[in-house]
Amino acid sequence: DAGVIQSPRHEVTEMGQEVTLRCKPISGHNSLFWYRQTMMRGLELLIYFNNNVPIDDSGMPEDRFSAKMPNASFSTLKIQPSEPRDSAVYFCASSGWPGELFFGEGSRLTVL
Amino acid sequence: AQSVSQHNHHVILSEAASLELGCNYSYGGTVNLFWYVQYPGQHLQLLLKYFSGDPLVKGIKGFEAEFIKSKFSFNLRKPSVQWSDTAEYFCAAARNTGNQFYFGTGTSLTVIP
Image 1 (cartoon, chains in turn brown, cyan):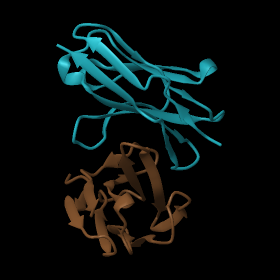
Image 2 (tube, chains in turn purple, cyan; image 1 turned 30 degrees about the vertical axis):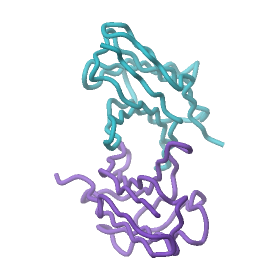
Image 3 (tube, one colour; image 1 turned 45 degrees about the vertical axis):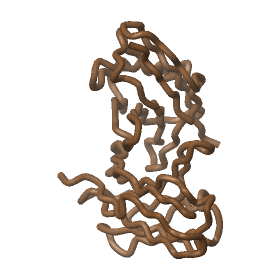
């Protein structure tokens, strides 16, 4: 089992640039979650999908953030335009039901 | 609103001391409960989980947790901590009728050799 796969692991970009983070959930899992983690705000749920459908996106900070799940094996989180305050570690996690969350290793984003 | 509360934000212990981290959840229905650990610079990993059955759950690395329904609690324990237990610990709850997970704010544990 390959686990949840995220890419890129590290990204450094300049303010105003578009950032796309990618996630491949564990095969067979029907729920996918995007989290953001910072020292100041801790672990925050941004959005989650059930069966590729967004269920709760109330954690998405603003319109600059968007997430898609075009199929059961792939999801993206896009930030456009990026800002320095978006710097964080972004985790993707997946789950079967009922079951626990399996986290990817995270994408560390630095916006200069 | 559903929520998970972790009362200890920072805990510092000496090696071999006993550990108990508090966790309370607010949902009154059936819930699944979890403890995750995040070692420095790593992702969250599952320590243990409770779905049903014996309320005393044993996890990896000598950790255990007890589900007390009347107190809406799921405290994490370890009889003797090691320096390698230094990490952030998160309690989480998920409703049994859906797949929405709620995380506590985390407890930072530092174990002094």
